[in-house]
Image (cartoon, rainbow, N blue to C red):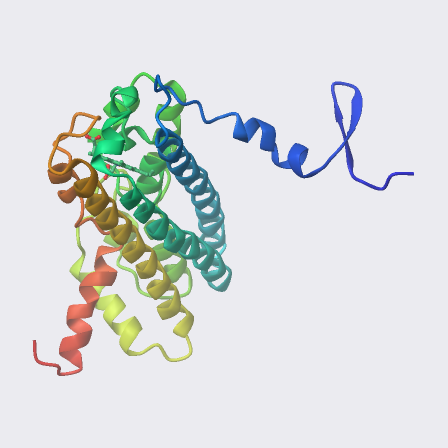
Length: 284
Ligand code: HEM
């Protein structure tokens, strides 16, 4: 008797193995080079993007778990999930540097195959931004013809962000998160709240036995830092490959990307630094 796990496909019993479980043949059939004659570097370009999309999928998957833990007030479990998300983000900031091996001439060899294709149209990247609270209606136009994508973005836009859930979890533990912050319109961009900054200042200055709150805040800031780092390295890679030329998605390219560099998902957690430094009497 063979002990290998088996599964049923259309009435036939098949042995499950590495290739069939992970769908390796299907995965390896997804790199369709379009250039004629085939351009060697197009394979690299397709694989780097496809692997990014797989990791985006995993981060979204973990983010949904993170939100569920926050909703139950399980802060230490949330920490475990943020740790994995941040480890993946670390890898992605490394992975984006691989673009440095693609010279402008190599990229030019197949760039026209992209048509108007651009990272601007990455639904999962936009979902990530939406999930963490950055919800700019401007980007919805890129998905207007894709009903499923619109539905996914709408669902993210209607749900509380990771930041909202974090603040609710803290409120559930008795941290005096201001009512106007808890009640703010989740579909809108966040306005910086001075009252919330004050609450964070107290939380950081007097953690008492509740240091896990500081730990989670710092882990979320790690995520914010890594995301900003990704943006920054992507811009360097873009400059290295296409200089200041327009993007295939029709934007001004580098200039457009730089305009998004300053976004932060957890603004008050950054702002509180100013107060903590002043409180310690360090001259600015
Ligand atoms: C040769 C390599 C690359 C070049 C030249 C490039 C260039 C650009 C440019 C110019 C834009 C601005 C939008 C546009 O007009 O197209 C953009 C946006 C974007 N790219 Fe890339 N990119 C490259 C590789 C990658 C890779 C590997 C990823 C991984 C997923 C990626 C993800 C994105 C995302 C998510 C955006 C939207 C950013 C935002 O809205 O803030 N790009 N890219």
